[in-house]
Every structure is written in C-alpha cells, then in structure tokens.
Length: 183
Image 1 (cartoon, rainbow, N blue to C red):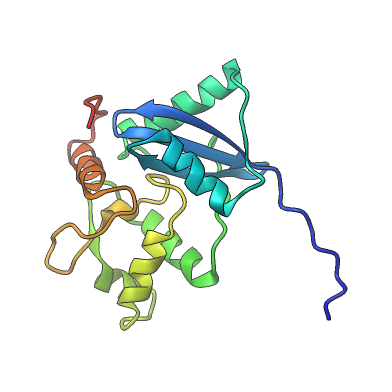
Image 2: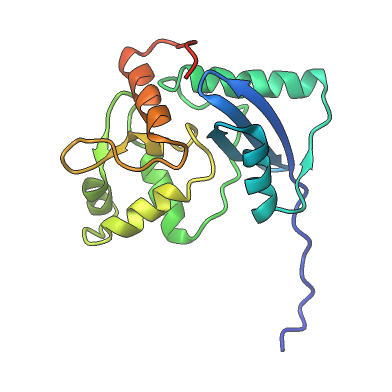
C-alpha cells in the first residue's frame, strides 16, 4: 500500500469566449496555458474540461483576463506567427505524447507532414496510429499545431476540433495573414 500523501491538483482556471472558429475555451495553471479548445458550443467545451479537470474554476472577468483572451484569439487568427513567449504552455502527457507534441511544434507554419513521416521522425515508423492518438490528445489547439498533420496521400484526416477548423487554420497559414471570417 502506498503511504505517500497525494498532492492536490494545481489550481486551474478557465475562460470561455467566441472566436472566428466558433466557441473557445482556454485554461491555465500556474505554469501556463494547459487547454485551448475549439468547438460549436461553449457549454460543451466547459463540460469536457470539467470531466477531466473537475477542480477547474472560471476566471473572473477582468482587464487582465480580457487581454489574455485577446492574445489567444490573435494566435488563432494568425496561426502562422510563432507562439508568443508570454503565453507559456503547461502540457501534461505521456513521454510519447510529449515527444509527438515537440515534433508538431517543429513543423514550420504553412507546411504539413504525414502521420507516417511524423512517426519516422520519432524513430518509430510503425507507430503511425500512436502518433495519430497523440495528436488527438493534444490539449492546446494551434499552440501545438496538430492541424499540420495530414494523411499520407495529403488529404485531411481527423482533427479533435473538427475538419472545417483544421482546413481554416491551414488556409490561414498558407496566406500568412490574419483571418477574421467566421466559420
């Protein structure tokens, strides 16, 4: 029997907003951004977060929260720009997921990679499904650009936040310009 005390989960706070890709949920821990989710309904995003992180609490509206949301929204509008240092990430995942997410962040904006090529980059060419699963587990859309991964034949394949959003992000990166149209 383990007699080690269980450490409480770190405080986690979230905010909901709208962006050009629909509903937006951002959550942060004391270490940084730990969730950036996109969807159709804000309530569904909140419920999904609370299923996995029941200790999460809403951020109280304030000028600081508004600036935080504005900065995240600017990143969504211009995904070809480097992720800003003032929005550090706090990514929790298995060592394999962490390795996949690191490789995803190395794909330059406007470029794509296949799941097969990504598995090969990791030195695990037969781990294509595991790579796809790690992409699907990515907790921070855009910051860890899993939208840049395609099927071997170049077609779009699964995206946790919807194929239309994946296509929109890729189109924004192709132009390199911010985009304000709504989905």
